[in-house]
Amino acid sequence: MLPPPLVRRVLCTPLLFALTALVVLLFPFVYTPAALKRALVRGGRDRVTRLLWFALAWGLLESRAVLACGLLWCRAPSRRSRGARYQDRHYEIIRRYVAGLHRVARRRFGLRIEIDGDRGPGAAAGDRPLIVLSRHAGPGDALLLVHHLLTDYGRRPRVVMKEVLRLDPCIDIAANRLPNAFVGGGGAVERIEALATGLGPRDALLIFPEGGNFTPDRRLRAIRRLMRLRRERDAVRAARMRHVMPPRAGGSLAAIAAAPDADVVFVAHSGLEDMDSAGDVWRSLPLTAPVHAHWWRIAAENVPRDPEARSEWFHEQWERVDTWIDARHTAADGERPGSPEA
Image (cartoon, rainbow, N blue to C red; front, top):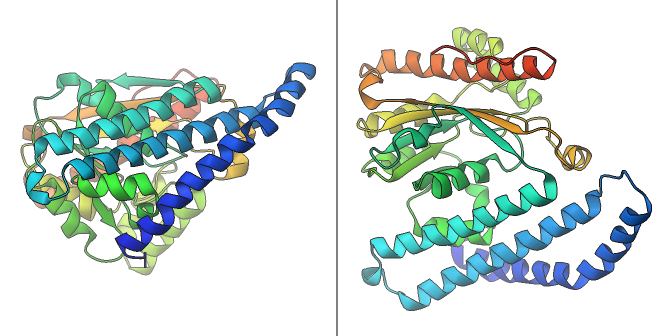
């Protein structure tokens, strides 16, 4: 169980500023010898300086975002003085924050993203509310999605995220002032349903149906859990999907039912899933291959209305996510990539 908000902010926010100051102070002492080594030893991957630059940028960007949130609170300390403009300013703070991280990741890590399909929200940006259901695999995929929704598509993301993320000062402050849902323990479906209610044409509800970051071990544990619950059909279906975990469909289906006028966007991506640990990230830098993503958007009128038919449709779409990822892995082994049929 997390500490209450006041305790978190008294402890975590000063810790953020202290760690950022420490990185700033140590930067020249670590960067100089690493840069000299890079100059003397050609052909190296220069991992130390890449990570050092990213840590510096992360600390400075997050500290700036927290300070900006504090300034907004000083200007509007009471709830009565907060309206749509107050929310827009917080979305702008988050947009600058994640866009800054994206720029640094491109420059220092060699991050490249290639999106195919109908580009999801870009197909008709701003016309209808969206429910975005994405695979969750690899470091930073949630930040990348939020970046694309905010910067490329002009959307206002409502994100379903784990309760433990409240320990991050920026998320704890900014996300709590915006319509988001933190889940952990009971009541997750009800919170997601409430979050989906009243989605506007600029809004995009972002959900990761797997409920956590994909790893092969977590996938196997999820399948075993289905067997223990005597859900043999679901377990067999999940075992056929090799690249995703079986979805926890309750929250996603509740969101779709609560926002019947929202289009549904599914997101499959490949290129980050092999970075399960800090060691994997270290060995992968710099990134030599792009991250591939495939979006497809389904109009609200094409989503089944009957609950049983909608559940079957949802699982078929999730199988399509797995099929697309499998095609990408096959392409990486030397075959031409393909895109699964709807």
